[in-house]
Image 1: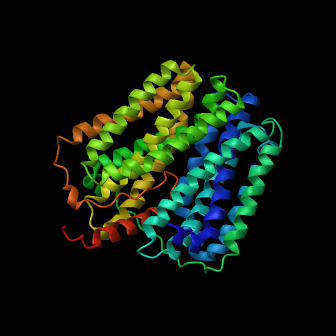
Image 2: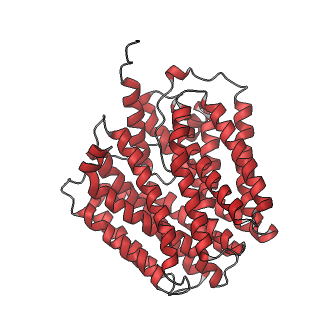
Image 3: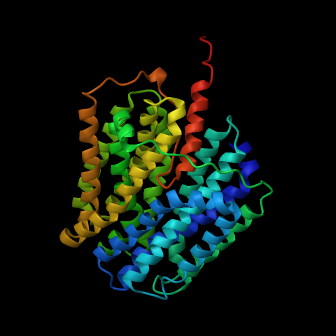
Length: 419
């Protein structure tokens, strides 16, 4: 791990600052929207716009990079992000925030693709798995750190919008000044959704539902906090607990997934998460109960995403994994667009408890479908499954392709001789 960090520290430093900026603005907008009098439904449309831009960029940004190069795309999109972040407190209209959030989603996706391309190019077959694990850790730590910056100033002012703008601007310096040359970029053509569904119905259904779960967490957790009457400090701790859970649960679940039927693990995690969210909908008035619920949903949702991709890869030959990952990311993006919209409607209709009821419903559907799929075909042998590689729900097809490379490399490693 330290060898990976030593050769790519500039990329990870830049990524850390980017994630602090992105994590701060995501939570800050949920709080500031309430101060501006935006309804939960209006905030849901605003938050959903980010994922519309992200999904559009996943198809468009690779073409931009191929046409004008990594550095120009990186610099241009970085300038957009920095400018947009300080425009939110200037134009406090819902329609304007929808447009700005869509631009942010597009720009951050393009920036992630650039960073992931550099990271993938600078990794070897032996270090790629560790590099992807470190990539996830840095992302999580950046978002967690961002939550505590919320307490530095008044969310009703300008300073908290200026801070992420500055952080994002500074983040580009270590990346653009790195001695590593910009990598060659080759876009991955996705497998057809019909072929992908025939290969792994559970994998497709899981990543689609998890798109809604993750977007609800990332986009609407702060909106829930304002509707539930939490203070800014409590909201920051609540959101941080989600990502602490995602960071700490990822590796124990990954260890278990390499040693058992992954469908059973998907079923158990989804069912446990659904039950916890149903309880949280009843007891959300207690702040300790809220923190426990946040820790659980983060710990369930993030590893489940990696688990669903690993399970799908178990039924694919190595040469098809990269194209399949592109299709899975598309399904995840479509699900992510709808997540905030449904959560906002539910919170408008039944109050803050709608946030947890939505999460419970999606995880419950996943658990029920996993249980049904277990009756349709046998699981692959544990000795024949690929390795679990942590992948963040925000990962682009470049990171997913790098993870596929790590899985392929792990499959080709010779088995250790028996004692």
